[in-house]
Amino acid sequence: MPSGETQQTITPPGLTILNENDKLKILFNFFLSFFLIHEILVCLFVGFSIKSIFIFLIITFFLPQIRTELDEDLIAIFSGIFLGIRGIGLTLSESWSTPFSTDTLDPIIRNWIMFLSAPILGILLFYLLRFILEKLNSKSN
Image 1: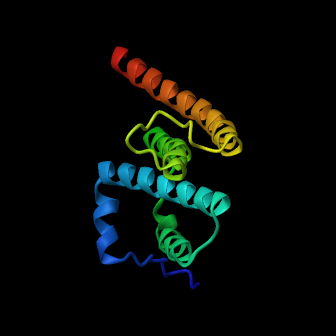
Image 2 (image 1 turned 45 degrees about the vertical axis):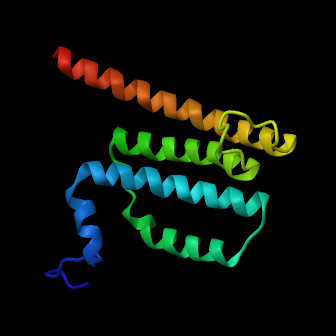
Image 3 (image 1 turned 180 degrees about the vertical axis):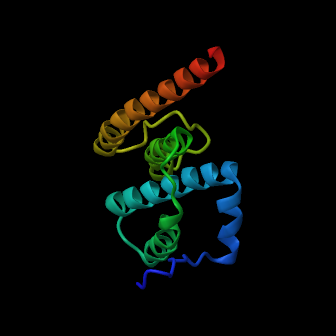
């Protein structure tokens, strides 16, 4: 690239709103990580389908929009991953009437969900506590 030119990124028109609004960006990070991990686990536990391929294509289009600079962004991403892992239990057990009961779920899948979600919950709690302590510290100063 010549020395006088600057690199411009082309953003689709619908995504310019996300770049301007921080709250929408945090929600976008949450939902994107939720749907990505949920679809990955559906593919692993149930199998791939044409629907999964379309979902992955859409998600890979939006992946460059994820922002990880702030603690709020990381909290949104890890909470989306955690709830996506926990949500796969509801999807596979088909017991939406009793969401906290996973008795109909296969014990192997239940253990996978527990083993995958436990470290993510630890990371989420670390960033949440760090965020709270930084906010309390800045208010006391």
